[in-house]
Length: 391
Image (tube, rainbow, N blue to C red):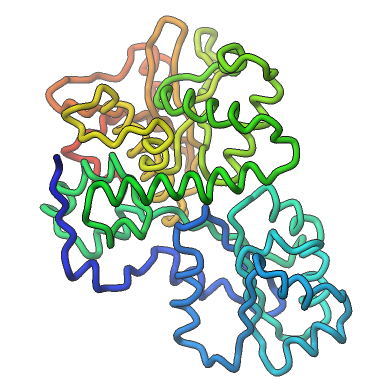
């Protein structure tokens, strides 16, 4: 079993999130800042840390899960909202997607209350985007908070600690609270709780999810195909009793509550390139392993390559998000089985990457890639250089 090396320094320090500075800078008068992220990734903690530097008389903090918040905001009038705010200039609503007509209510506030600053958080793009989108056109900014990234850990860890932590993070992922849990079994229990009490609960609240067991089965099928192309028709066939359209609907919901994301095939219209299928990744390895109920150390697993690919992909997504790298992300494969795990296109560059857990295996750029894209770059990401790629 892998030993944990939680340093007391890391346990006792409040880990600064990579988003902290952007978060403060993005709170502006007569604008709404939307903070998205899955439950338990640290949205509320980020808010609390920001508020430590502000006098409590300057802000009002509400919780969308509390019926009292809905009642306070129910009367959609300028008089009511000015009375509610009093002399406070900052309004923060945690889990704002639970409040009916929240978009129209916030629009009224930012349009009519001079100098008001508003921050809302949400654990569902589906709910909150739909409710905020049209009413807040031109009045909002959006930030995304992910599970802890290696960028954030690197501030507190030396190279030895990071390399010793790699296996643990490939197995358990990077939810913030895990850094305070040292026992292997307790980490498992925490992640099972996240899946059962938060993620699946959020998904199953949506209308139209009539076969919850099928949705969970779908998650397991996708989890077992991490790193491989996923065929929607095959998923529907294996699930039996639900249509292709329903599978697509469920995958869309899983994306919007930050469980999964998809990567499509890249093509510049070369005849032999595959573009109609997707790869699906989990935002966090720990959630993926909780879904398939397997937290075994790497020496007892047969899916190490898949875990490595999902880990690198999710860390790269975090890195690009926090570093503001505006790139399009793909995989690449031809019908004759030449492939690349990851492709990025942006800033006039095209770069193909291959992920390899086994550092001894020599890898060259696929011939079709070199011929089709002679100006593109190629790089192999291994345990020897992965930190340069994600930090």
